[in-house]
Image 1 (cartoon, rainbow, N blue to C red):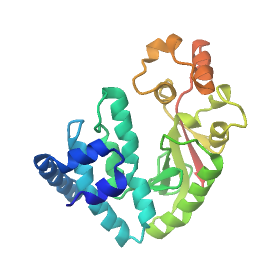
Image 2: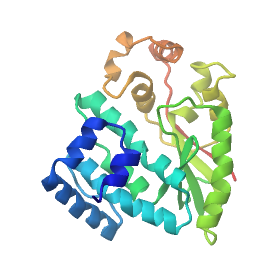
Image 3: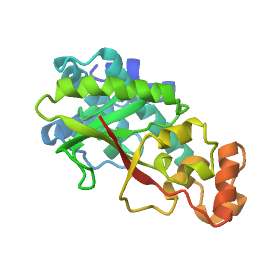
Image 4: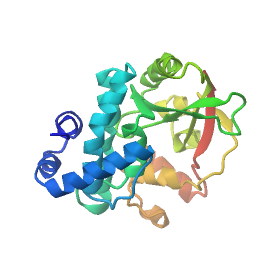
Length: 263
């Protein structure tokens, strides 16, 4: 069965494993759309729910073969593709059901553009206009679900340097770049100076960026379904929630920011 690699090594939900194995019509549709994505190297339109999972389940074998041909270890392939489980959980948090919404974001994982190397995820890309120099950069993404251990992050940066130098020898990147609420210069207002989050933020040189008025911070600190208009009734289950809530109620924001690190 074409989806067995995904079912056996990537997917973490038994209920969804059974669903993938028991709907041949949806499996055929997923296979068709997966082939279209491979042909065009771009996402397809699919309604949130089970269909995006069938598409990724059929794409996983393609990803595995692509990584093998590039000399990428099986462990990196599995770690990269397992990000789907986080987004299944986010879908459930919003809808109350198991399924998937974010097919577009996961396209990079399954078509071979994004790689998880330890704690962080990386993408080789064209440089942003505000980056100091160089034609290419390595974009950094921070998957949810684990502490932002600064030592583990540093290991990821060190893994990424030779990894991308080998994959793109003719397109050297000069900077890591990242856009996230975790780079916000307001972070010291809501965390301790020696916290991992604050230490991570201070790794980056700030670059010009259009702020988001703190929307990502609220989403990540209080949950995907939280209404920013209800900040006065926001939960206070963690010290970060308490401090972000107090900071916003006092008139502050924690806006997403953009930064770079010289490789």
